[in-house]
Image (cartoon, rainbow, N blue to C red; front, top):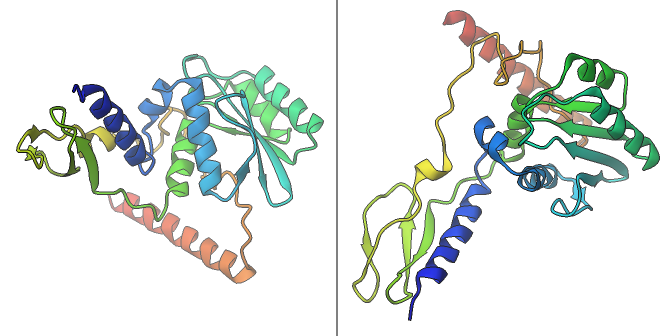
Length: 245
């Protein structure tokens, strides 16, 4: 019996399972299909406590809720390398109004024109560029630890071998057949070059501050104060470290 197809299917499943724990790089986000990017953002909202009520594979928009609040998310197609224009922001604003939603979020991994940013400032729509998206994806994964093991199938007998992502040694299955590791840490975690201090990942001037795109959580006032103090301390530490360098 040929186990190659089953082994390839297990490899895809295990790679997808492990990738769930890793924040994509800007380059990976820009290389995604529209459906894959929408699914990535839907997963982010769910990890942040939202209920996504639209299937990202079947709709250009995501409708999601946080308690009684209703939001609409739209994404620019990553294959279109041009910055998002104001017409897309205007369309999302109209959808927010028609759906009686509280707010809209427009994600564009290739940025926005100046006119689009100006329009978003006066509309119930928040523009989110690639650098902001990466920060929010990372924030949504806080506390999630990447599993260190995964399964691989022997292509000769179908036996299952457990590999580690930090090991490159070939292991034998129970029948003595060699099973080389099909996944490594480098498949999951890419080196990310640090942008210049005055530039964001997209090459545009960095904003004065980078608040989370949404903070609608059922938190007590005391918990909110603690979170705000921690955020302030992180920013102060980062500023001090930058000045020392």
